[in-house]
Length: 601
Image (cartoon, rainbow, N blue to C red):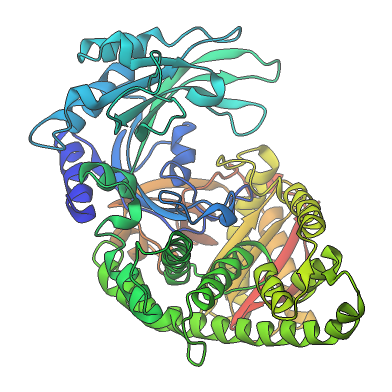
């Protein structure tokens, strides 16, 4: 079964079960400071899982592109991916455990759908603890489906529990479905979830049934929800009896192009195979990030930094495979990927020129960095050769890495050519400290998937609507939102504009926003079609994908409103509660895009 076939079957199955197909969203989430990228299919749906009504109803299904960057350096094995596609179905207060499990079982085992033998399936459930009882409800549902007791594993919270992302909020047990790829158990009590590698997870049903309060109590929710996720790449691997996601037709065109560029046949040497896999994964992730309607460019901060790491690591492994660096090699392979994936993701072909341009620019820039690093090594070489031990201190190798971005592997290669050994233990120690500092500084960015819907953040979100319209009033209708990042301390708003704002323009924008706050305007919401929304004067984000029904927020009276936008975020009821609006900084974000940071006082 191909990825396209699985994607279509999944949607067809759940649409037949009265689910509305909704559009997958951007890889770069708006108004969510907790993550750099969309990390799971449920991420864009968090407001609805928390209680908002979804325009498409209470049964939903889609496929969603995702990026997970927990440890890019671990990519290279046969299953780890940075970019992946997630299939998902949701119940927003409709069916719960029994309904979700029945549908999961039918899709997995029915001859009409995936036709997986029941004896190949295993299940894990939450074993219960001092706070929440064992999930016997899920167990009963699986037994009803014919799953025997010896293929149901009861696992602790770290394995079969979701949320809350923060210290409080919605959470609940999950039930994971595994496929058995072994020929004999690793031990008599080998069950799903065993670390032996013979059980591969293919699907996860999350049951949000509790709210954890500030006292640490788990209060049953009146409106219980289901959130599920099935990874396309891993499921296709299993359905085709393969051992690696990189052996599937999903990666065949890109892997073949890498092999051709390197003059290497995959499967010959494990170390070179690892480099091929890294290039395939990192180039695929980079192409989707650059092809996103809210695309970022390679940089040294945030999502741009992740993108830069992906591209540069792919280039470095190209060099390890012996691929010529005289001309960029990534963009021609990206063009093959775009051709392959433009069906389900038309934004790739729409943004092809930008993808190619950015890949070429970053590859050339990194090659210049490598040349500079090699020059710095040459400057160190005379003193290194004087050392009778012929050992390069790890701190010097780390300086090349940290200051110039020069990979340790290349430092070791250059050292070896001069009969010098790098003190790798010292380098690893310095690198570990560097990672710990980086993780500490990124805790708030990577802490989870839930958006902050607190009172202060809601005020800031509403203020972005006022700011957007004020900018259009002062600068012109060419102004369009290009992104935003909102915390409980401030708002950051990116918008299209070709030049820096003058002090007078900044003052005018502040004055307009504060004027609308003083008027204490009403903030109201309506459901309508996108065509009706735009006909009524509502602004919709360019490049964003919308459902057939959208939520439109109007600030001001129905006739003579101040601003009207298509939006799904949280809002206050009246502008008077926002307080004083102050622009702290206006600066460039990227070519043709400006950035404003502002606070409410």
